[in-house]
Image (cartoon, rainbow, N blue to C red; front, side, top):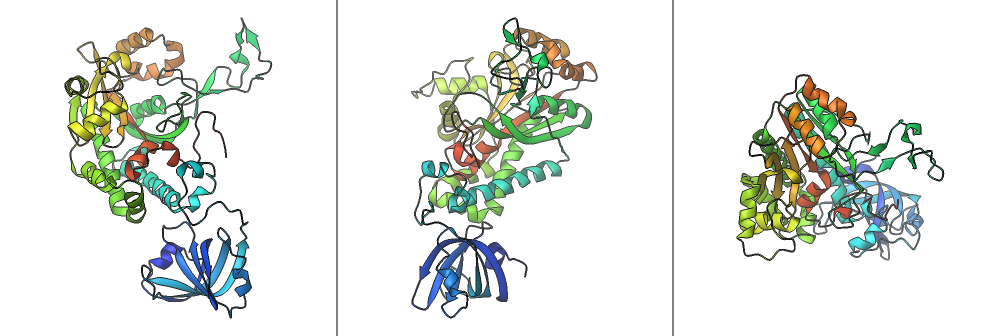
Length: 460
């Protein structure tokens, strides 16, 4: 007999005389002549109630089916007289697939997020994290659907790289050299003897490779893991995270801002319309203001404000910020959230940032002070997208690289895209985990990743 998902059974329009359900016992309650089991298989938030009469041949198995145990139950799907559920399963046979010890750590109570991070291998069995990772899965598919509908090509970019896209030096090194006795040249490791014959790192972005393909295939996007060795143990930073990075050929900053807005609004509307059950859990138990905030994002066109105008607004606000607001400094989360949550009370796209705080590849504006960069800011999160029009002029690009002490030899292939038919192009990066934080109201990035990687933490 083919197994039926609990989600399918609960959505049925008619009873069934025989179903096979497999799942994990959430709770068991014994009465004089029968037992109630709450069963969940991860397919949906709701449990399926199973009733097992004591005249079943397999009834002794019930006594072994404690919380956490895996079981297979064949029975009849019938209408339930109980409130809050349409169907229940009347068991005909029960098989214990995997027993659960008495020290099973997930009991019928609310556990703290801090505790659940210590048992990340079990937290998908909880309501909150089952909902989170179902939503994460569906959202990933929605991202692919968004770009496919706009005829973008999906590109797989390297995880191991010899280039520092951001120029910040916060990259994890990859090596096969013997760290206890590495070969040395003038007191420094001799990377010519390493696996790749040069120094290699984990990528912080697929952007540079994405740009090269945009110069031959039009519009592309990458969606994969990226890494950053920044020693920042905060609720917003991870050492390993996922990025969505589209690149558009023949596009300028305005088109880039428009695509970023369309993507965010599309994904917000997707979860509002297609993930209602799991989203309701977060709206009811995590963030009471979540639904209003998502509706605000979905229904309002994003404002566009220059960085300079934003600094003037912040300076004149009379607010006391932890980090001073000075033209030429990057805006902090507290500044971004003031703009979106208190001043404008809606999403905002800031653009034309000071040159000195942005990466080498961003197109330089005619004022000599700013670049064609943009950040999409949303209430509850602050920055969720960062991007720019790329510098397509070879002379301006190499000049900027020299100012930042970047060796042209390391980027020869990147510079070739400007030498051979270089064209205006633009793109951005969307942090997938920050998107999940926005859509669920969860405030710690560790709780939207299956197995978070943070400083001094490499469990599982």
